[in-house]
Length: 418
Ligand SMILES: [Zn+2]
Image 1 (cartoon, helix red, strand yellow):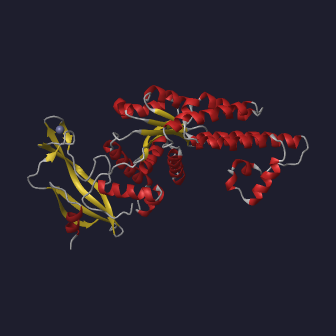
Image 2: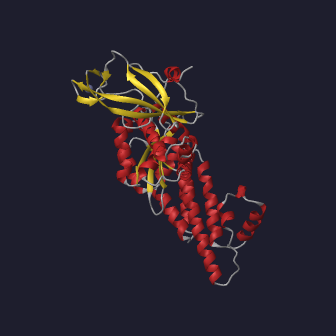
Image 3: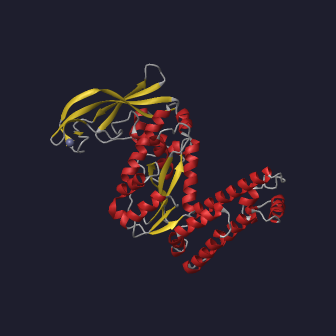
């Protein structure tokens, strides 16, 4: 069986023929000549219609999937056509997008592996460069974004994620419908402008059909949601509120611990961070012992801890009315606690009372667990891959692993487990 026979079987294109396969000059590669089929007209890359030929460009090498340790190149002289609509332009060839040196089939394979391995590992496994893996991902993501459908969106979640050192943030918008969760959009920064970019992409019609929006209490997000999705039920993310509360508690503990040390007391609060932050059920027996010890003192930390624990009941309500009464009472108590970080939380919760109660109006169906889970995956994607230093690369990687984008179809499966 000849190489040409195999190629004709797995990578056949109407209008073109494989002519001759041979070793490259260094014997490290295989070169295959490609010619237009006799009598078949070239296709204009501008309007995708057949057009009369004009001239030939110099031979180009298109890299195909390597075989048995040899790089494989398809050699072809692109024709230029004289198109009635587009003028003199280069022809369109089915195996390449014209922009990249790699064939579509090879880019697709590389990109699929690049979801399984890191980009660096993928490049090493295929004896190619990181840049070419990046090109492959760029092609697949670009195709996917162009061909994805956004009509099904009813629920979205927006969140920010920190990347690089310093205060560099991305805004990530997810679809969080029950049947489909995916990353929809990556924006630079976390400003009003960056989040508005998402609504520009989806257009007014799709924005108008969104029924639920889940977000944290970041002011620019709240403003954009009010402006662009006024019809949607806006839900505050439970996960972020719990995180804020833990942070406040930590502040109280740290400040009090410092003060106790200054006053010459025993370092009672040292190492107690985890037993204060953890839910009671998750404590080890030693931590439980320490917590009981702590609770004997009438410390601010203890009182703050009890307030935090008490607030967990909030999420258990079913009726917005009862939840609202609980919230009001909790805030009232907390405002009298004379613990400043907790009072600050109470003020924030009061200010967002109606958004908080929307959680119950939505029948709790969009608990932030979904957004939190997607955000964790985004962090893993960022961590797994060194070299995602620019926004553009990071954006590609995130779409690639979380976008659930459609893929271009090939007639033959070039074995990839993902
Ligand atoms: Zn044309």
